[in-house]
Image 1 (tube, one colour):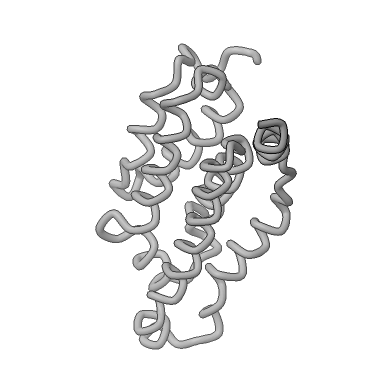
Image 2 (cartoon, rainbow, N blue to C red):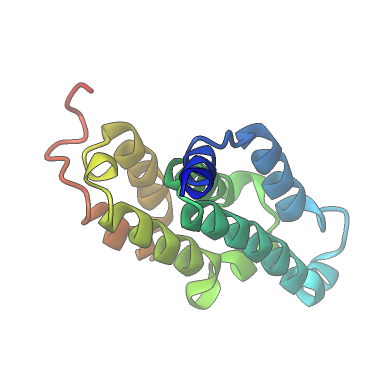
Length: 160
């Protein structure tokens, strides 16, 4: 029992190299930048596949007890893919069309936030997700509304 408990504690305290994840997300999103729009359209599925792999890794972190690490990875991904100005048009449409990657991120975020009173009260996380939501709302993408509704934060302008 001590071995299992020690392993669980190690998993909960596992450090996540968020810079590495951000780099991988950025590389995935920009891997088609040098191609013509028609080529980007044809190959955009590769970006979704690469991002889904990272979402899967975040899910594994959460299952091992490192919800904080998983949350960091998912929020970072949401922030990066919501930056419309830096993403090629065909890639942008692929990421955000018909639910796309936003839906996958939000599903995982909801699962984590729902089960944690600590995260539900974290104004920093709330603000990060609210910024992503505000950016994407201009495009009719409202997936992050569901995540924001789970927070117990009354006013995002309150001090932490």
